[in-house]
Length: 376
Image (cartoon, rainbow, N blue to C red):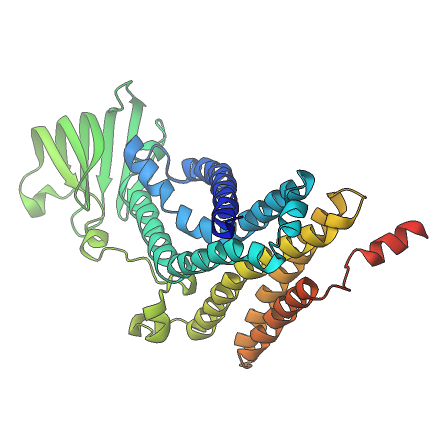
């Protein structure tokens, strides 16, 4: 029997299952986040393609938390399928040892570790920071959808506007604007219709068929002016000093972790929170290996039992949750108490070493305790 072909066969089945589970998880969570994003920036002058592009920026961050659970589910389902179809016993009878069966799982897990490192320390931070920047730009530069007809509203610092209604095409009807940004020379505008638009990074109020009423004509000498079209810049001061989204600890790439930017150092406790985030992301990568071992060990160890696989799946899920909570708690404590990273290593070795011991120790059966409890 060609063991290379068997390993490739098992690896392809595992990879296919993992891709399907990852896609389903990502799609479901992405749709939920997209609904929340609609409430945040939906309709604020963004096209469908622009909104779709912004919503996709959250996927890299999602994948850093989805890859490991998807791998656990893939390993459990494939190993249980091998056991239920008696393929596992046939392979064992043909001399295909559990360690060889573990090779395709380790190969896929190792590849996913590299992918998750790239996601966690470069792609996801870049995408998350850009996502916040895009949401910030949309919120700053588009206020048309928030304009309520029939009431006075501040559309920019020092600028108050009123519109009687909004047409079906989105034009504001019977517009009145009072510009007191220059307190020494306030100006009032009236127009038949108007709309808010953006050109590049600057926002303007476009008015048609109106008048300019200078509140202090004796100073300017112009009184009332008539215009067919008029462009009023909005929030000029804010445009000249464009708001920059500050870097957050989770937005730092591996290069910024090793060499923090000077601007980030001005934020209180930034270094502490950045190191905690980096440790958490690094520890989260280890879940791929631990989850793969958990799925393999529990499924194969339970293969000799006749109690079904529901309890085994519950045990694997419980241990996975315990490990996940442990690495998050320990990584935060290591950063806050300035402890050695060895604490994370000890937590990882406890699970990793336990899995190896269970695999290669023929006298070990983690289900004996459950059987004893059931019989009693």
